[in-house]
Length: 175
Image 1 (cartoon, one colour):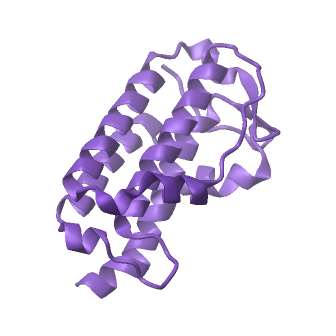
Image 2 (cartoon, rainbow, N blue to C red):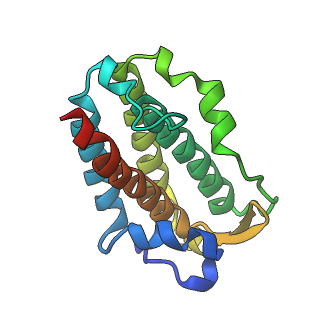
């Protein structure tokens, strides 16, 4: 498979940060490595630590982990639709109501981590299965044009963004 980095005209400017944060290299190998990184990071946290919020009104670590799962599910669904040639415009989503409705703090870290592993494994399976021609398919998400090729980079960059926040704002307080 020849999955190459998307060009700026393939996605809305709002996605540029995630694509930039994806780094360089084989995006599927990077996604696999990131899976191991997330498992190592969250797997060492207790349920009490998972409930930690670095400030009032901020998400807990459990909220963040479930947010990674929810967002990746949505991104993968978009990739499936666009990759299969479906040009039906796809809606955006508001992450805050999702986080509230999910009630992540009522779940265990082990359960949330297993959920995230399953999501990432499914995403990788989907990404590896798309034919080369599918990556150039264009669709619309949240009223913005995007190609299927952008989505694995967005998945990687979105998670990388939140991992940076966790390392900077959560872990120093927990140690």
